[in-house]
Length: 271
Image (cartoon, rainbow, N blue to C red; front, side, top):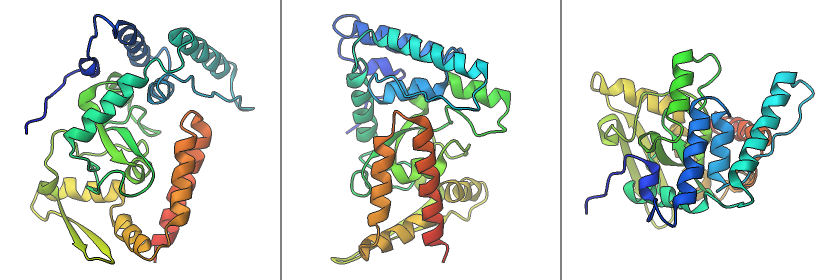
């Protein structure tokens, strides 16, 4: 069955000029504010991904007067935008997630493991990071802002891949590239164990993208992760994943937990 292609997130709504008009207005104002830098893409996306909850912007002793003002302005803008409706974007966010899930046949775009069959959550990921890593060029920063709410830059991935990627740039685009051209992905499945294997395509050009995919998303870690799950030794990972999900509206705390998650994964797989 062919899957319908959408060029704009708002095309997912049933009645954008009628019953969904308020959602359209809120979403348009939000993406314009993120694109022109009125608020950060991180805060704009946090507001959208929670369905319309204003993110917690904690005070930091190191905050400059400018940062303090930006936090106050962001909070005021988002509170005015939601106008008392705490779930003003919930339906649109869920429609986007459902569309991407169906488009990807329920598989993570980066590791190809079945979503919801491991870990505790799935994430809407920005293929080109909404907030590129420190040291990024001004061109990349502006590109991240302009693509923050572009449906062609959005995909679904598991919490493992989302955490490994963080805000790193990569050259594999799941909306443009065919996974099997770059990665040889194999599964060995019995009634007691499940083993996965990832290898980069050795052909010129293809291997560059495949190697980049293996490196950025640390796909070899998932080979170990499946072994741990088979041995029932992945309980701690599930606890950390749950903590990440429960701190979506607290940017600083979520980042710290993600850093701990990466450190823990690196430690248990380095042998």
